[in-house]
Length: 303
Image 1 (cartoon, rainbow, N blue to C red):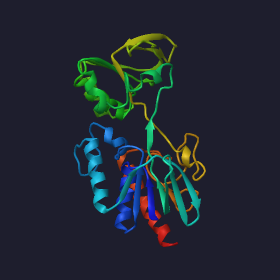
Image 2: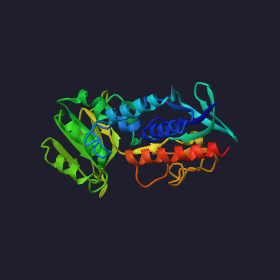
Image 3: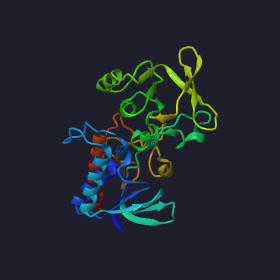
Image 4: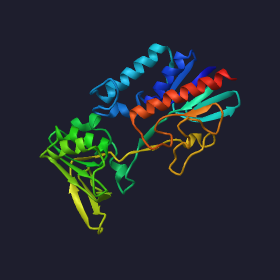
């Protein structure tokens, strides 16, 4: 039996693992996919202390290396539930495995939000992508559409503009919400066009991805945009349904917990982007991980 099982290996979960191991607690870190979380897909991170500029994948690798050097156990597992038996918690996985522990930290982060428009599903991973770092090279010299207007979207657009023939940024609001510095960089790119106050109405049902139909928010006017591919950067949504009987979820599916990272179930804590919070950044996720780990250690020591 482990002292602490951490569900999710993004910055929150990895930081929690470091703090828990430094407190001499046995730790098992579980994640359904590659460790590092969403930050691993960021082309450039310039707001993390000690690094003026670093790729998200490199930052994630450094975090993982630190956790492994501290002696935490790691497994690739898709967690599908938690059983609460008082002093003992059991973490259940899709493969039928059961892991027992004294305390659990939920740090599952969030997944890419989709448009939920006709024909979107048809072209996922075959014309529609979420990561310019991963898939941008496939569109070198071609035209792409980028949906979104926040920091992540603008970073993706900047990266794509370096190799693509044209990048069309489509934002549903009448203004971009990303940092002004990023907006200024985009404004200087001759191959970038920004379309504001517009939403995607549908992805055209063609044999291969070739166009989308967009709608002006102000008057409902429909028009077409043609491109070789499309990237979505419209935010994330939590994946907490498996834990709804253990923690309280808000209307948007986030764990309803405060800065203390406590949930309604003693011994179960939450950290990172899956928690209801005002600011979701790599630094705030790491802060949550530290808070949750310290709280879990105190809980265990009081048993």
